Length: 250
Image 1 (cartoon, helix red, strand yellow):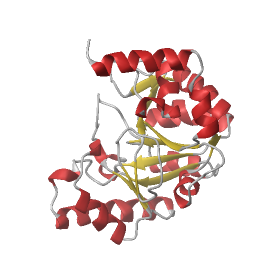
Image 2 (cartoon, rainbow, N blue to C red; image 1 turned 90 degrees about the horizontal axis):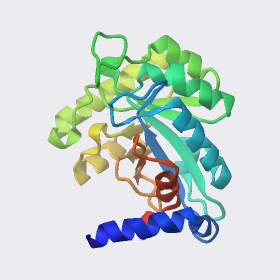
Image 3 (cartoon, rainbow, N blue to C red; image 1 turned 90 degrees about the vertical axis):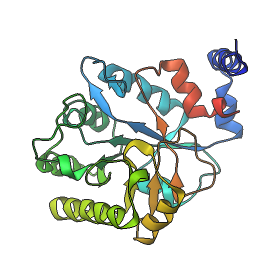
Image 4 (cartoon, one colour; image 1 turned 180 degrees about the vertical axis):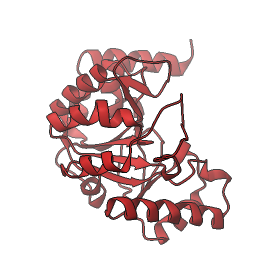
């Protein structure tokens, strides 16, 4: 058995007995969750979770965090209480049909990162999944709970892009979202989570307030290039509590 596996088992047991509560009290952190697909019945897609699992996770979140819009979380660091923001990548239409009703019922804000090349086209991104329409996005925006931001245009890994291709992809995505939804696009999430550090500087200089990665950590001080905790179907309630508390970052 490796050191890593032993450590994980110890932290798992510590979570069962409630140790993460001390982290919320004595070391409050901001957290951003990264979801993808919310399904009525779980498929084989690793980044999909069921409606019921989302409901259960929201119950856990409410016990320990103040849930805030993503724009609010990036503006300044919280030192008195842990805050959390929910994000959803890819704008799959199961967000509209499955996730949005749950969020609306619980009055929870969320940000959806939109890959614009796949909206109202014949393209299916992953597992043959369909995407939200602009009208569905407008309907969700009208509640004041859901914000739509850039996930690039073509949903290709930015790590493989030169500076000109990067700028063109981001500018096109921003233009399409703002023209269709009349909202300000000033946040960007990397498709696939792969990037070079120099690309962060380029994107921020283009006027974006923050860049979001898929580095799975809680947030400490940095407010410009931000990690997000990846939620997959493997996150049972104990593993979920470990993630959001930051205990597994010891």
